[in-house]
Amino acid sequence: MASTDVEHTGGHAEVVDTGWRREPAEAPSARFGWHGMATKTFSGAAIFFALFLLAMIIGNHTGHIEDLYLIAFAVGTLFFAVRGWWMGRGKWS
Image (tube, rainbow, N blue to C red; front, top):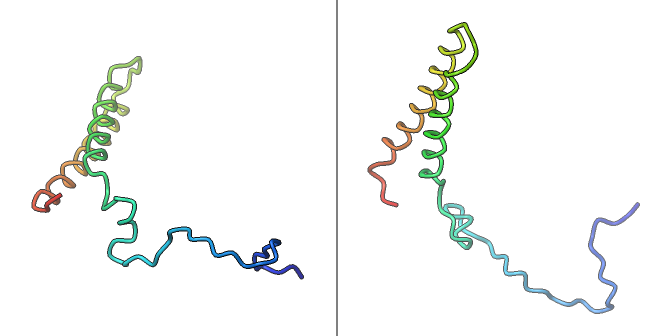
């Protein structure tokens, strides 16, 4: 059976410092400068897609059921964007 260990063929064990350290659980990616989610980007994307959904109302369809679905999804998207902004307004960035 093949071994799962990495074997070095150089004949001597060379220690390579990769820079990886044990990081705290509350900020595991602090070394990379990333803390949290990109809420402004998510809000901007949600507003863009809601406007895109509302723009799709203008089309060549004759029924209005499609319009109701487009409006409902646009309102739902805007709801979550505004809710995210509202819940995070007291937090400092």
